[in-house]
Amino acid sequence: SIFLAAMEGTVVGTAMPTAVASLGGIEIYSWVFSAYLLTSTVSMPLWGRLSDLLGRRQIALVGLGVFLLGSALSGSAQSMAQLVTFRAIQGIGAGSLITLGYTLVGALYSLEQRARLQGVISGVWGIASILGPFVGGLLADHASWRWVFYVNLPFGVPAALAVGFGLNEPPPARKTL
Image (cartoon, rainbow, N blue to C red; front, side, top):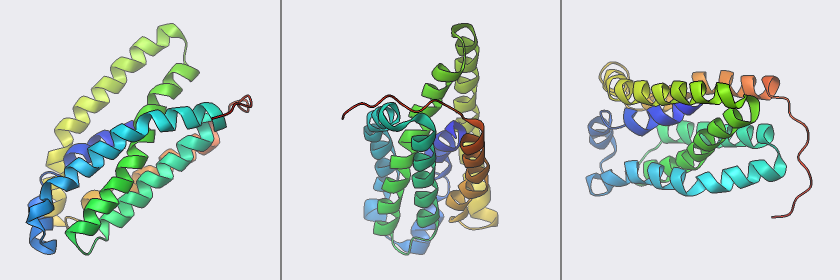
């Protein structure tokens, strides 16, 4: 899920000229990127707190669902304003993927294992940053710009299944907001 969120930050860049040609709206072009980054950043502490209160598994699934919903809606956008709005929704979900990905590493692995896994996650970010523009251009040229969003769906479903069935945790202690 961290890979999906990291890749989505860069995959859109090379597909946007095609999207602008299709949808228009060059004057709000930059908001397609900004909406995603702003909402993902702002929502991170909220997802972390919600996972403390309600449980990591449940909130990870909700966050992944929001991300995938935003992805599907972004791919179906009929105007640039819709695309910006749907990217904001996608960004809210991405905030959970990033935050809870790191949180789950801390919860599931020993201190010694965490250092290695943090290195792996950093490598995932690096690979996503390199692959994102390439994949975005490839999809825009050979399929449609919409596929830079739809491509998340077949990867997100197995991620949700892995979290849903693979993450067992004790119920969280009752806390108040």
